[in-house]
Image (cartoon, rainbow, N blue to C red):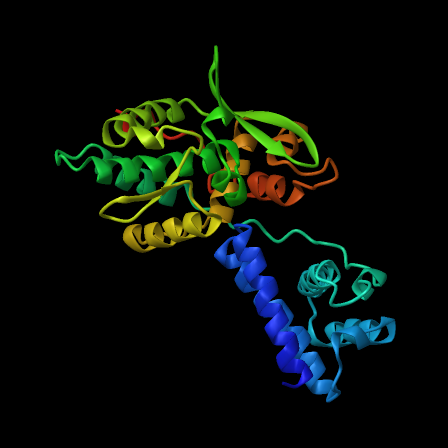
Amino acid sequence: MNEIENIRKIEREFLGDLDSKGKSFNTIKNYRTDLECFNEFLIKKQQNLGLSDFNLTKVMEYSHYLDNKYTSDNSRRRRVQALRLFFDYLVKKNFVGENPIRKIPVSPKFLDIPKPTSYGDLIKLVSHLRAMCTNDKEDNLEKLLALRNLLIVCLIYGAGLKVSEISELTRAQILSDKDGYRVLIQHPKRDSYSVPLPSFFQEYYNNYNRIIEKLDSNLATEKFFFNANAYRILAEGISARGVELIFKELRKKCEIQLTPKSLRQSCIFRWLNQKVSPTTIKEWMGVTPGYSLKAYTDLLNQHPIEYAFDDIPSSLLQ
């Protein structure tokens, strides 16, 4: 086995490790693409470089290679970050003694122009799922799946949750107070905080719990969501990849443009339209105070009708 084949083998192990930690399908796909750029660099150099030979000189050559290959700072930044995490994995597994990638500066991250799910597509999606919840069939599993998907939509559009947060969500994180419900966001490296859930969350939440108890009381345990196919419930809990697949299926069925990221961006516009302060929005998003919302506020000011996101109409909740 030559060195590039060996590197690719270890990269597959690294990607498998990410998968075992519940990283989404798109995240793993992006890392695979970013690492392939590194492989192309090694092949182009036509050197039988081993990972332990990748020193600061080679790091700077790779940085120069990225500068010539990509005009986008974000593209260069992403590929350096992917390689940095890969070498962290190599250090952890004792393949190398240190991570040389940490010796090169990271390009500043520039915010892409937001591309939220349109409000019209959101209403179309909710109408579709709502119809599945209220049909006359005695198929409780079909209704439960629709309610599960509605709640996922509510948590992203209503509270800005990430896919990783949804996959780890437990029942204990749904909190009740005098104003309705809140969701508790927990991070291992910073203090927990809670985000208020919109009023339309409550009806779906109550119906979801009622059908779960009727269909399978064993699911009313720790994890909030579950994994299932069209015929049966497979397991408690749902992976980040599972959430991504749900959105892929909904895109196809409803013929809409929709991803968890675009729906989360719609949530930010919803908060801005509700006059939530930027400081509070950044706190609820779980980003640093230095994170800029300028791209969002500029679009809202320039096209107030196009970005007039609001709560789901009460007519869809009856």
